[in-house]
Length: 77
Image 1 (cartoon, one colour):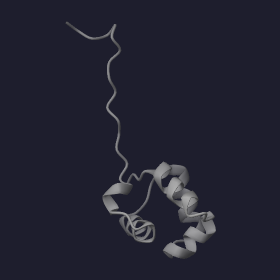
Image 2 (tube, rainbow, N blue to C red):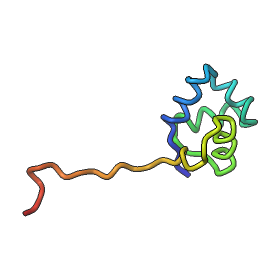
Image 3 (cartoon, rainbow, N blue to C red):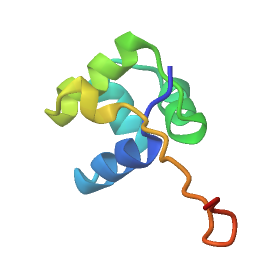
Image 4 (cartoon, one colour):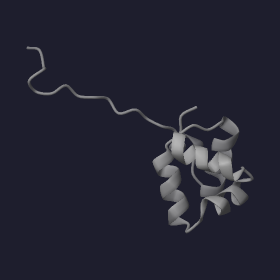
């Protein structure tokens, strides 16, 4: 499932943790943490582990696609 990789990275850096330290804190492998930050995909179990160590609701880690707005020239009247 998609995860907000930018937020994960921001939370990790704000705690002054390396990816390895985050892996230890969450019980995830280093490769899993690297994949989450690079490809923005994580299992539900991984999301729960991250939410727990960052003390945030699991929903806060969800990736939300931003709706594209049409350019002014393309808007139909």
